[in-house]
Length: 191
Image 1 (cartoon, rainbow, N blue to C red):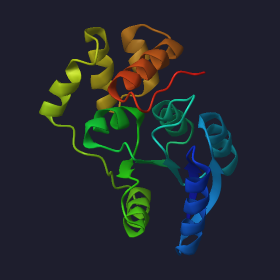
Image 2 (spheres, helix red, strand yellow; image 1 turned 30 degrees about the vertical axis):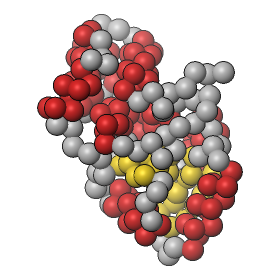
Image 3 (cartoon, rainbow, N blue to C red; image 1 turned 180 degrees about the vertical axis):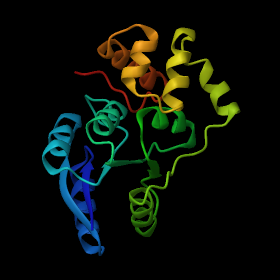
């Protein structure tokens, strides 16, 4: 049984996903949230196995929420489910700790398969090639390249902060700004 939390700002999408997931054996929706704050509260309360996370949440930062989820519960899986799920976002999704990314135009059977694959521990993100890193280089300030390298190597935030000689809160702010540069559709100003 895979316990799934849905975070999407569109009410019809949330309701449709809840209904469709309920119809599929082994998939159990445990909640649905409309924004980053509600999603975070439900993650803490429901302790889902997998979070189906829309990339574009108004007034929030989906990739920052992904990082919070993974820091809070490393066993929880995060599958980015969005109309903006393009391979160009692989670096940002990887830095955020996402386990996979799936386009909303994918058929339901592909969604079910993606959920099961990510839950089993498979990663569903485009590979980060040297060419993709080179393309991203123009969006990343030079002082932040060590952060990118350490995050891609899986270095814990505390170790990165210690290496750089900064507080974890400062590191978190820098990572959020990095994610906003790499995935502008995922990072919105907090209005």
